[in-house]
Length: 130
Image 1 (cartoon, rainbow, N blue to C red):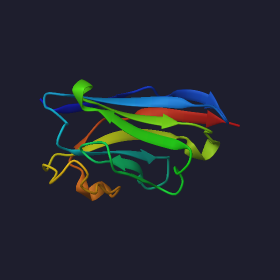
Image 2: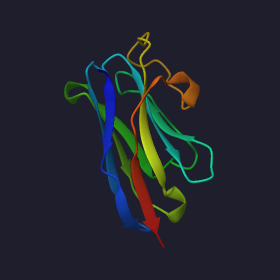
Image 3: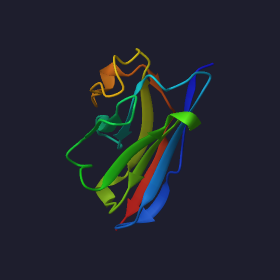
């Protein structure tokens, strides 16, 4: 069964850092766009960052630019999100997602709109206190 499983969430104080991981099982992510999304209570799901299949092209939401870094290790079938300078507004359930349509190239553009992604993890909670 194809699955994505997130880990690394937790509670931190403002200004702190966390590193989220998302490991795929049941299939290889090597040719897929991958992305991180988040959803806070009462708010719509928000795309945070995406990465091309080869890891060479990334897209960030304005809220993540300069603070978050998305990366991937295809040999480990794993996606990462390094989050620094966390603020209370970053508190949310963070989920990873895969667009399982084969990418045209290693640097093909991967967006951060949720409609493009068909495989989702269950999420990991991030809570930032002031």
